[in-house]
Image (tube, rainbow, N blue to C red; front, side, top):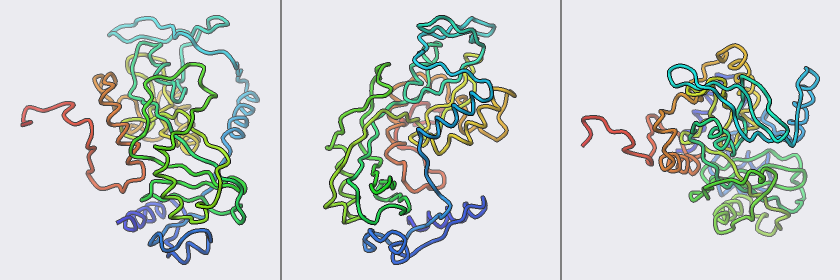
Length: 331
């Protein structure tokens, strides 16, 4: 059951020193009075969890980088990655071409989010990263909301984040919209929200927080997000292109992973290896055939998106992308 899964998470959290506790519906409602306690059987609460403002975070990182000698050039897109061929068919990064000229470098970090696949192709390689539309809505201001804890309803596949006196609500629908391509100038643009897809979340959020049924929507946000076949980031150096590193495919969790993964990719680039065991995120976990097969990547990434909040079972295997590679004993 879901509560068994939560208890397993509590045990894991205790091992890593994360404070958390199991709560009854009544205890949960005391923390979040707007909840309908009949809509769920229990919860876990982690009082040390928090949230951040992505824009402020990025600005702080840029300021820190400049203070340590980094040069930040905006409005300077890379139009081509310049490589030269080395032995054994491996290419080597030697620079990038931009509208303002060529920048010579032997190291590139591909952290272009949903555009990372486009950047990889500039170097003549493929990565199994699929851009999809991901959306959330921001409610009109509500009384008694400010300061409430954020919520993840895993069985309902929705999340609710407090944003001042409003709630930002989104989720992972079973039928996400996969994007075939992304315009290069779309990086600060948004799509119109497709309510036929998003309505499944509206029903779930009203069941959990009945007051939302009488609350207006202030704004909608629908943009491109990157997802991967195994719902894990893509990191490390490309085995087919020396000097091309990846830090992308964060499956809508980039701000959460950013600190730890940023630290590890820095070590990877500077020292040749990360400080932690990162093979589960290493680009080398994908075979050359998997990296090139768009149909397989689409199917597996679709399933990973839809099962984002599913219960994790031992030895669970994906349902999609089967028979990609068959052994001699396959019937």
